[in-house]
Image 1 (cartoon, helix red, strand yellow):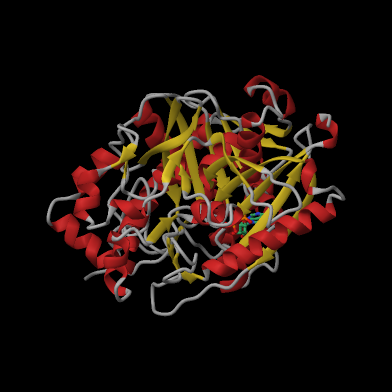
Image 2: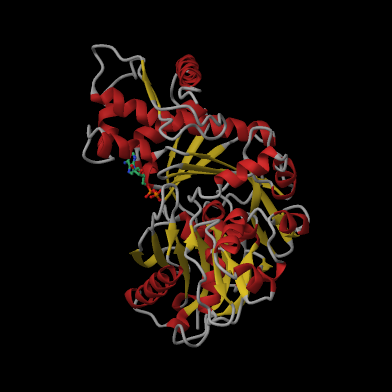
Length: 500
Ligand code: ADP
């Protein structure tokens, strides 16, 4: 079969929906299918998914995408999997039945335990080995919780009867009809159990969290044929050839394949990831050091930082105070003003994340006068997204000592022209938006396509990747300085607002 008759399928298993996207040899989208699934909030701060629904929704959209593309399964040259990271599933090795619901990355039930570990001085050790900041976010404490709380679970785990996996592992298990228990190195690096320097599960951490080694999956590269789907799933046995966590896949989908290249995804939050090359960079600014991918024998590292409230600030304008009825209305409102007229918004609606880290901060508007209108609120919210990204990126540059030449962008809010222009102005570096904004799925497809030889090498991928628009700085430098001065003043005044 020629490559024109063949395709790559990306399975994009996200936090609220499962998607399947079929890409052709030019790297263009042939078909998309998407299905939302249920979110469970059994207690304050708890978030769960039904692992079986994750699987059934993912399998359904895969079949639907193949039908929509009007092709047959044997025309799929490879499958790439990308997934919500850290979400934790434990299942019975014999029956394949989950022993508990999936505990989602957002779930805070183990926060108190993490605080105990911090108090006993374990944070440094964990950071040294995993590159992560000790937090309930990552899988380790979620695994421990299930083993502690589900009757008999730890005993069965010790006897080798239980499998642990992040969502990629779970999907591979299901796609191979229970034959393979694998994960990839990017997903492993988010468990808080994987030593990112030695490239192996860490005995000390397994001891610390009291997790039996027998439950762990085998760790694979991000771009290699790990197995094929079983004959039961599709009408053909398709190679599973690419696996990466969502942010790492997006970094690859943006072709940030050289040291110093960086992308920001403007979604509900903003997610910045910088390729730091083949050596891990330790952060002095509380960013995460993580694995970007492994291709062949070579492991590439990344620095990662997130802004909690990105597009969510716009959601709040729409659904909270209702000054707009559509997110994209903010663009015209902001453009309608020649200046922010001194109005700033610190969207610390859930405290402040990297690089400020202040849980007591709360959202605040500054500089309101009688002339302030809803347009100022809209503009201040968009500007705040850009300032926050600026602050994380500057922290990354400080840690990595790599200056940013170009910022690659994607995600829902990257459609906002005002925001993108403001971002390039504030950063004083180019901002580049690709034609295909589905960079997460695209990255998984690229990783799979490389492994099966559908695309020859990364050079070939560079020819496929298409720019939609490049934004270049135009704002007066003094003005940039002035705005940043007031933004940082606003941040300082927001910190520590709550009192214990
Ligand atoms: P997620 O994957 O986190 O759900 P998306 O990438 O779909 O996020 O982006 C949606 C977010 O982007 C929402 O928070 C929304 O408010 C914001 N958004 C979408 N379109 C625009 C726009 N034109 N201008 C500003 N914000 C937008």
